[in-house]
Length: 104
Image (cartoon, rainbow, N blue to C red; front, side):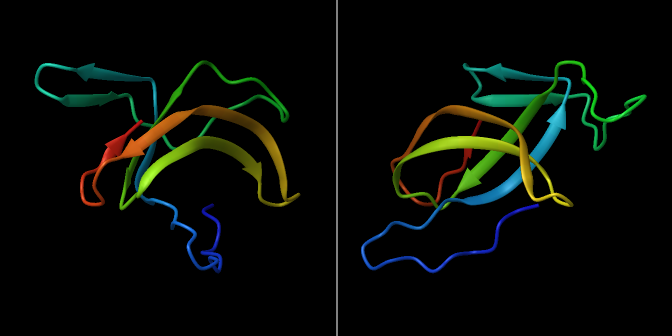
């Protein structure tokens, strides 16, 4: 679940807007055509018991309306307990302009 928009301080840049988050088996990138393919999209994990371990998966994320550089972190949260289950510090992304989309 996405966090509510927070009040920003004067001079603080706004966070980018998330256009898509897709869980999938694979993401293929074609650098020549500048296109990506998302393979095997799914919306749940089937586990014999919880907590449990999943097979490897990817999260395709598309962002827009960013200004400058951001450090991207993805968290998996238990919304009932309000705790972080897993966290990955992905990398930095730089928006040269606000309108183009960035896909991770």
